[in-house]
Length: 264
Ligand SMILES: *[C@@H]1O[C@H](CO)[C@@H](O)[C@H](O)[C@H]1NC(C)=O
Ligand SMILES: *[C@@H]1O[C@H](CO)[C@@H](O)[C@H](O)[C@H]1NC(C)=O
Ligand SMILES: *[C@@H]1O[C@H](CO)[C@@H](O)[C@H](O)[C@H]1NC(C)=O
Ligand SMILES: *[C@@H]1O[C@H](CO)[C@@H](O)[C@H](O)[C@H]1NC(C)=O
Ligand SMILES: *[C@@H]1O[C@H](CO)[C@@H](O)[C@H](O)[C@H]1NC(C)=O
Ligand SMILES: *[C@@H]1O[C@H](CO)[C@@H](O)[C@H](O)[C@H]1NC(C)=O
Image (cartoon, rainbow, N blue to C red):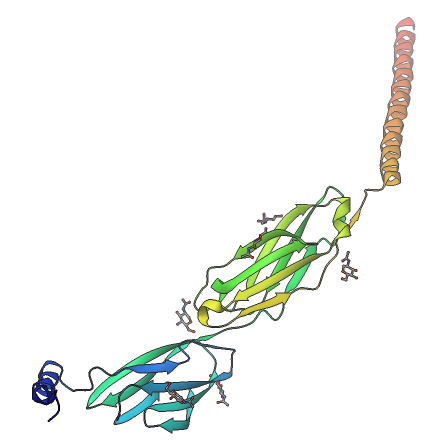
């Protein structure tokens, strides 16, 4: 008899009464533990259990799935055409006891397009301009950082708080005043989608560089303005003098006329 023999029966009874279904201690594992996928993508999922002889097992999902391989303690599925965030469940039954494990599936939209706009693109020194960067259809927003750069200098960076449904995109704007040196470096916009906390990597997107064309307000232009203003003033001055003169003459004539009448 084995040294544990005398404990065998009580142990089995204990297991039976205190934990109905001796499969109580079994575990379910899913690999990978997080699923990150591009829209329309497919992923392999492996469901396994510590139960030595599971009676049943499967994957519960509204997505298209197919069983590719299986072993006594695992099933490997291909889950395909994943178009939105969802949860899938893996289950096994062991000694009549069923357990579930869930797996979060997140769909991400990489920052494929990063659109940079300078407004106006042609600006006089000292005048305001706006740099706007827009990334359409990017998700999840809470993993996104947009950075506006002028040459190598970061003008600003913006992080976002996500909306569950949002694929509306993200925008960052910066208001500046044009300096002559601004046209020496291009403006650009960098998008970083940091998916590391979800089991992914960092995805980058960069806009086309854009140059701000800065011009000096032309001095001859100013001269034209000054000359015009002076001319107008001169014209008004001369006109008023003439008017005074004419009116003066008129008034004198009338006075003379009045004397004439008095004299008559
Ligand atoms: C699925 O996972 C189990 C347990 O980790 C492992 O033994 C099995 O080889 C895996 N199957 C595949 C196809 O990777
Ligand atoms: C993929 O899913 C979309 C919507 O979820 C559906 O319209 C389309 O028919 C599916 N494609 C395939 C090949 O199953
Ligand atoms: C934000 O911009 C600063 C420079 O202004 C940079 O040092 C920092 O790394 C940026 N943060 C992120 C999260 O990109
Ligand atoms: C997300 O979209 C669904 C329908 O597509 C809607 O029922 C739900 O209220 C939306 N949720 C949010 C947070 O906007
Ligand atoms: C930039 O200026 C516009 C108006 O010209 C204003 O609506 C916007 O809020 C400003 N943006 C920032 C980041 O200051
Ligand atoms: C700015 O970008 C343009 C292309 O848009 C490029 O031809 C030019 O060399 C760049 N200038 C600098 C200073 O990097």
